[in-house]
Image 1 (cartoon, helix red, strand yellow):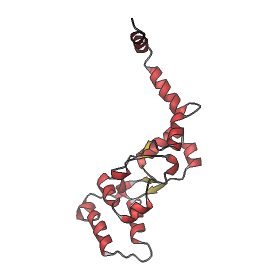
Image 2 (cartoon, helix red, strand yellow; image 1 turned 90 degrees about the horizontal axis):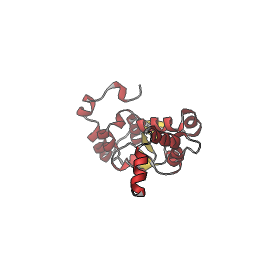
Image 3 (tube, rainbow, N blue to C red; image 1 turned 135 degrees about the horizontal axis):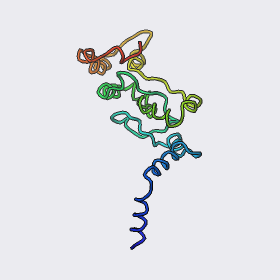
Length: 163
């Protein structure tokens, strides 16, 4: 019997929970290898869409995409707005992915090391249009009108934005 066959058989006879132990040790062990990886390298999936579907580092995240903005169609339309592209580059994560990060790194660690703000559609509209003197140029109206239309409001619910 060859070494490979012998090793393969002995590996198959091991307790299946040992694989879980290895993964658990990577995530929560003394060296927290997975935690180190996602905080120091672009190794964490953003959970977003289009060109924002990428690997990111937790250290660069400033916003978690929340509410109606989490919807793929809405997100993809908003990412075409010039102001969005300038302000939110490589610093976004999907809300559900952020929840996973908090579980992985620990709630206390995250609260002590990171300030991640919710990013709602209404926040982006405020930034795009302006708070004090809301004015929209014709080219901007085309972008906003492609998203905010009758169909948009027909599928909008109260829980999609902060109240």
